[in-house]
Amino acid sequence: GTPKRGHWSSRLGFIMASAGSAVGLGNIWKFPYITGMHGGGAFVLFFLICIALIGIPLMIAEMVIGRHTHKDPVGAFRTLAGGPWSMVGWLGVTAGFVILSYYCVVAGWAVNYLWLAIKGTFGGGHIQQVPELFSSLLASDLSQLFWQALFMGATIWIVLGGVSDGLERASKLMMPVLFLILIVLTVRGLFSPGGPRALSFLFTPNWRMLDAAAMLEAMGHAFFTLSLGMGAMLTYGSYANERTNIPNVAITVSIMDTCVALLSGIAIFSIVFTYGMAPAAGPGLVFKTLPILFSQMQGGTFVAILFFLLLVFAALTSSISLLEVVVAYYCDEKKWQRRTATLVMGFLIFLLGVPSALSNHLLADVHFIGGRNFLDSIDLVATNYILPLGALFIAIFTGWVMTTRVARGEIEKGTVNFHFYPLWHFLIKYVSPIMVAILFLSKIGLI
Ligand code: PHE
Ligand code: NA
Image: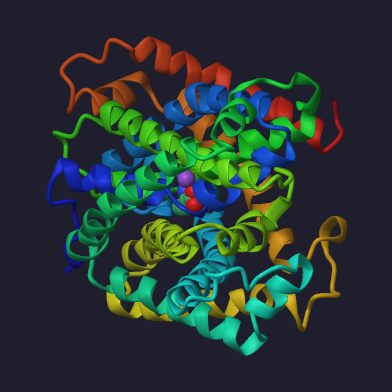
């Protein structure tokens, strides 16, 4: 017979695991740097609108589909509709594979920096030079592969533990620590000289900076940061029981994720402004700019340790959810042993990550999309194209293919009467698909 599927041991476990998936490098590394590049306030506001109008409804949709079928993404769509719809599940599993490959590389830098911080590298003003810094800290290709492998090893190890003893337990341990560190860093930032400027940068809209590219980036990031568009929340939903109030969980998780992004922005930009640096440093904001500033500040070593520990914990509770999507597919559809699926897929994903790891030295001069290196190119394709496309299909599926009887019935197993059903249905049926389609088409130049 088929082995028993895993499930969350409690509602809190489901929330912590889902929040763990959502809160990741996207919040602490990516959100601050793309916000910095797009001028702050207006971008943040549009991002919040995307979270509310598309993100939350879509998270509810994914969790509903997952729990209704208790299957992996491919199995879920095959069960509910079959035919070409299974492709949506496939797109998701592929996205999980691709995203995790470079996610582990960036997370590897974070582990490397944590180690450097512990050794005291960021203390006492040693670090001055911006351009050399990154390449000298990330010493060699070999050391990058080492840190990437270490992080992937930790991810595999947790996923091997299973749903409640692996994913859930790890998230319940790491998330509270993460919140505590974040609060310390935010309060510290608010009371530093750059605090007020950080607040006005994040919350005063500068509409001139909000063009179509910025809007697509904000929307793509809304999916990325909430782990949507590829079946991660669908898979996590498939481990929830019928008593779970899905809208409640989805809203809680989305609010937690948004708070972490905003607080990270405050913590990081207050440091940046205190030292008179520019907010638009790009992807190097966290890995190039911050270390210099840590090295100039009082107690920089301690702040650096806290910061990179925060980054590592956030990354780990997300990477396990990416691997879980792929593993769930091989277990549910291909009937592989969980152990085999985790080890084999973990290793293959590691291999796919190798070119990303080499993109700072060996492959530094090999350019792909728009002059970007390998890592930035696949990040762009995954975040700006695959996730919005997956999200578009999931929204269309939920709004137009799934019947009200199934959708409402599933939601109301866990909440007696979902008063907001008409609003949710309207958002998922019309607002999300239209917004995603318009932005998508304008990006590829059709309108
Ligand atoms: N939400 C995670 C982050 O913000 C990334 C992620 C995307 C995780 C998709 C799972 C699925 O870093
Ligand atoms: Na996130």
